[in-house]
Image (cartoon, one colour):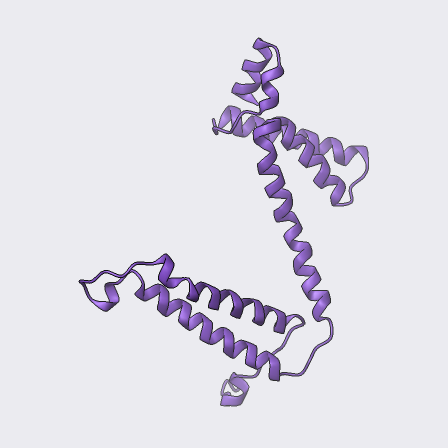
Length: 179
């Protein structure tokens, strides 16, 4: 078995669908970050160049921009592969779950940890395609267990929901302390 490779085989590109879109996104992002280097970092009049707070971030962002440009050039000159937008749509669909998490985190201070966790567990169970009562019940039970473990056993300090303010005094204290 020969492990000797030619220079051309070492640098052969294996292009994937959506590669050119990814190359553009990375190049735009890295150039944007590089353009912000003077506003986000400081220059100190004394000290060595390599000890400046701006030096290493500038080196890394400059290198990132150069290699992103090379990646874009390599993608532009490679043969086109079908399925680019299908791949990009897959990336966009993946970001949906980050949106669910942001909505969940934004809802906890208003509805409380227990109700929000149960509601979002049910919604995500339905979103995943599980529609029968067994799976929804499993989502409710597991979310209740998660809340009990985090709030009661691990003593994680989470914001109390504003909805708890309308509960009777005894129940409100229990909900604030344990749920």
